Length: 341
Image (cartoon, rainbow, N blue to C red; front, side, top):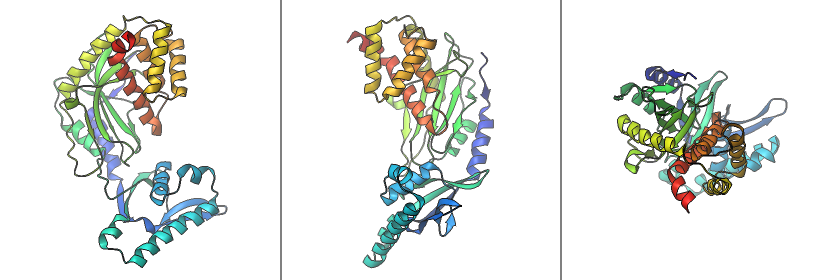
């Protein structure tokens, strides 16, 4: 198959254009309201203005107010939501006034409301505390424009830029080992759900969408930055990441020669569960192995089954996809010890 890529500068321009539509608004959480209007619908509001909100933003609002989100969405009706939300907001405001709180305490009630432009107008995509440090995707755009590398780096099409979880994958297509090429994976969230992370990996041209096996390099070359405090993001040297990825490609090629039986497959499935892969996903991986990977008869085919199944998670579920790919990378590295135990 022919892989589909974009130039780094083109992706940087997309990210920068999106960033230009973002607006942050800092105000106390007590400025929120909720309205339920029969025949019109339910919505949160800020200073009396109705808000277009994502599910994540609503979940974060509920968290700040102490309302269980599942109960809010699955059990409460509009009128109940209006009564509870507005009562909690009024109570919070009354406590501040009554106690004549200090400026520091008043400040602690402030939240950053994060908006971006959509075809339907401005949308609230995140509500974060005063401790949150913005590490937006524009940092990725800067790196895409300015970084220098020995090998040509191209961005894989299909890169996701969802505010909950963004992901930019770059490959070095001039390096080909056994149908694989090195990859650099940059992931981020712009509303506090995930940290800013950089890893190296493997990109394989095996199925229609390609496979991605995230592999863990040494600690000094695998970077993760939490959205707290004064954060200085320094994405590692791409040449070093490519070198680590090449070494792991060689490991994957060797794993294609490591055949396994039923007992080993069961051991691997149990190991996946211990790494946080839910049973539904384990079953999906087994089904993928049976359909496309000769029943997972080698370590490489088990890893391939995991990464192909992971592609079913897209959009706001991209973080789940990344979790499965991360565990696949761990399996590749630990399989010899796991099978020998």
